[in-house]
Length: 339
Image 1: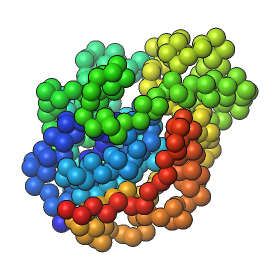
Image 2: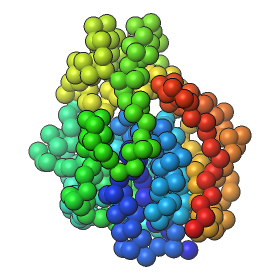
Image 3: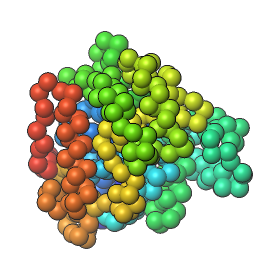
């Protein structure tokens, strides 16, 4: 069975994602398309407008065969770590190809940039674009890291040219919160924004000592002092974020760090956990056949199959996600999609 993988967020799911699924199957001629998906929170530390269940159902509806979940502690990471964790997981299936969206649509060029990145003396406080004096777009920045770990895990990287006819997830979120009608927006949870979480975050930053904050995963380089200081005066998320961002602390870095603080994920816990098993969210008959070919020791379909650390992460993630909703969403079993 030829297996192609996609790493996705679907925050929210839009028509560009349908295009990605369909083109991935067309280009790779795979027998099974596997999506590994961030759940309640995204790689940039944003709350998901769609529940993991709804994202799973939509992906299966439009042609994916097997949906797996990336835990938030591995998903809300920088491009390097995000790519490593997800490709290490997908290699356990094992997948043959990874198909990702790209602005340049040129694997050779992205591999050249990756080599150049390794050769230059980069300033860690500055972005990739500033260090290399380039204008690399978001999908290509992530794509470079995908290629890096595809090579490590012996997976073929395949690109799909990002079609500008489809607006981005970022633009979709912005338009939705501006009151515009969006694709499948009846499923969107409008409470899922950092505005909803900020009161709890602000209280936590004011109550926790800097020493305790330093124990939290991603809290480094004195960022705890800046966050505590800003929280004293910022009455809402927008003003907090604007005041917290610097050349060193980007928007995504602030969001990820604040998410880890809310979830209380410790550095020591992360050091002891270098890999996660594959948690199944849903599948069709082809995805089920794919699972039967995999090493069962790497597959999780029930909560009690998780190790204690991931059980704790799972429970805290759902508790946090539900904390801003008027009507908490119950977890659902693995979705078996009948075509």
